[in-house]
Amino acid sequence: MHKLTLLCLLVAITLTNCNNTPEQEPIASVIERGLERSEVQGLLMAKALEDQEGRLPMTTDPGGKLKTSDYRWWCSGFFPGQLWYSYENNPIPELRKYAELYTNRVEDVKHITYSHDVGFMLYCSYGNGYRLTQNPEYIDIMITGANSLSTRYRENMGLIRSWDFNKDKWQYPVIIDNMMNLEFMLWASRATNNPKYRDITISHADKTMENHFRPDYSCYHVVSYDTITGVPHIKQTHQGFADESAWARGQAWAIYGYTMMARETGKPEYLSHAKNVASFIMNHPNMPEDKVPYWDFDAPEIPNVPRDASAAAIIASALLDLSQLTTDEESKKYLAYAEDQIRSLTSPDYLAEPDTNNNFILMHSTGHLPGNSEVDVPLSYADYYYVEALTRLKKIKGL
Image (tube, rainbow, N blue to C red; front, side):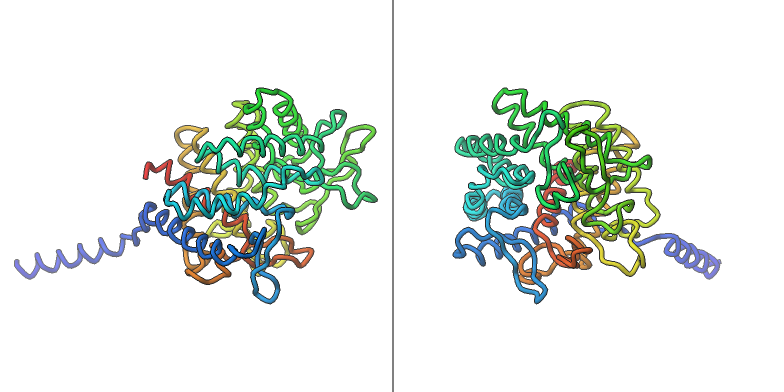
């Protein structure tokens, strides 16, 4: 009887062990590791460039060396914004010092009228800085920048013009990336109590929603409008695989932009659109198991093509935002997907070891593959949206 009881117990233990799967690391630990690594890399980067007046990190060059820019590059606001997020999570004087230092390096962006990216450049840097410090000097800089950005809007077109090059091909080009500059304009409208900026934002978002998207809610990269009729005359890509393909980061800009518009305006049509774009991304058959997309969802030779960690970071941050605008099972679905992406990005497959990767946080992003530029490299905006996603998830979890 004793032997039979022991045998039964051993069988039960064996069956129990066979049915158990390894437990996932607690998400609190994932968040903590990601934020700690981000802070370490951010401070290393800040100190490395401290004496290089006006310089800001971009990526690595083909030889593997750090590539930097001045304030005029469209990515200039991301590194100071990354530092502000690190400061938000660990408000120590050293982080604030460097966040302020690198934010000041982009001040002259306020006068730029040749780029639609002024929102990226100023709101990620000065916007986060003002949110956390209430420094009144930041307000005037951002309002000046909003006025500069608004010069790219034409009333008869109803859109903010994106680019000024390739004029022989595009008359009035608007790229999906431009959705990311609208939060800055909405802030300006509130700060000045002037509806002009909000009106520009709503018009741009509405026209983009009407003309940039296909029936499956994937989006074109570039839509150029006829300057006489105001209707699209060409729809194509510039950084994706093909005109009709779904460039991964373009889809990321789309879900982020319309989720933000839903949050900031309360308009149900933006929320509905964001959910439809999310469905396209989350259910795409070419999304890898780790949920870090290939550089283009329709790229030939998948899976033997580069990934884009920047797209995953942007999507994760957007889905976390979307989870707070929805309820019940919908909310849980978006939150779970974003958590999976953050787990992947915080794994050794994408998260750089300290004092490596030229002090960038994430590896394996893709900037412009058709132009053979920034392929399988770190990118400053990948790091920015990764730290933003970690910060959002930390708040949602109440950590």
